[in-house]
Image 1 (cartoon, protein in one colour):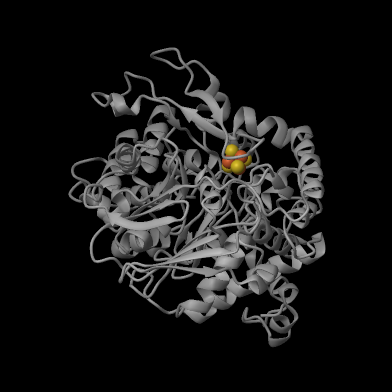
Image 2: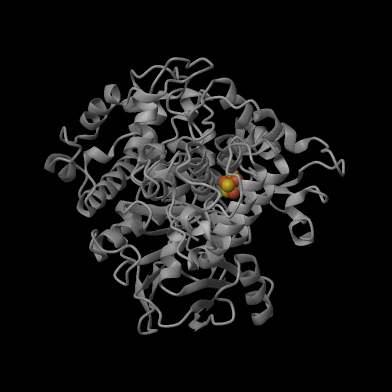
Length: 617
Ligand code: SF4
């Protein structure tokens, strides 16, 4: 259904549960999900508040297309202030819980305050109550999910929960739903755990309704599905190879961050690629990949389900990890693999399982381990800190142990749970931290893909590929090819991708549709589903409004234009040392002034009064 027009507000301090109508004036300006929940956040909290204090709020939110027949319309987001970056955080997830929230009749759940003791929220249509989580606090996400299903005797309940890493304060913990989907970035799970909120369990049976014009909606939805099916990326590449299809491609063009971003190509890339996941492996002769998987309503099905070879050292005496579970996406394979110099698919799959089992972001985790390996190489940390483990690039043992420690917040895992920035500062080498605004980089080296450098530097949630995926154009030629080594035109490209992503993240759809869809494909689906007179033009303006609103929040939180930057390693210390970008740095300083001008911001990166007025902020 489109907007249900209902919010439930949970005061964790008092235990009060209150219903309120959705602000429809805001809904027509900010669409839903990321945009609309961010509007509520901006309106309700002091941007300077302690992200892990009682005054921060946590919003679980759907979009107007969540739970509808639109392809990929199962997304939901978590919006809060990030403890990792101090900036606004919005983390998006698929799976099935977004649809379940809609079917329980809810657009949004807003958590305020902090519970005195661990609790979980149980929703069964109109029955909404906080229950004791004493029995699940201290358990993993997988154990929590199982306990809730067993306790409530209902296999159809959908669960989103935090694992032990979040309880122990790991700053990049996510919220895992449906066992292996996650609102993974920026520490949204750490905020949830700080409120003593262990899980949200939802069972919704109200069904679909409230579509504004069912015939127009279904015509637009069916046309959109055909576009996805006919497209080489969404109809073929992603279902068969997953996002891992990018591993060999990005490596070849010399944009594969390797060994804590000192190198741009990884000799072992083919061993951890999508192709390798299909091949029979040594040991049991089975492939790593068992099948693909889809989130609710998705006709792309990019998800990976994998196993680990039974005799592998990581799962000796741990048969529970052999079984099918969420396999490697490209971002996880890169961060756990090339950035740590590790080319063993079994090890990466094991570490990824642990990220899912205890809910921590594999990108930030892998990049933090890579930073720790560089610290170890220089002697800034030693085996005294790492419990005797040699923390060397390429060490499967180091990665496996690190994942086990972070999962439970044990020993050196506490340090690793700080994230790369705080870890490197603690051990005296802040220059080793490959972060923007305190968040670790994703898998595209900005020396080899210039536009991504600008997208990372200006991202509202710290380094992130999903806030402005210029890779689409610079590497894949979608919607048209631009040269990844050229800076001209990248300011406009970055702005366009950022505004469009803000739209898609606010609708209930998956960003991966944009390999095939433009806003021209999305607008008629949204216009059929709900009022607002949506067109590609007014959607793009809504995206720009959302972007500027997030920027305003960050400025009020204390960030400035000086935070729109990249580590000096990428701009002047270490040039790309191989591949097509050999000898190049990222030339952020050539792109940033034009970007600010296109955004209608001052030279210091502040939205001008005229811009704010134009966008109705
Ligand atoms: S494309 Fe992949 S991530 Fe997106 S909704 Fe489909 S299965 Fe989920």
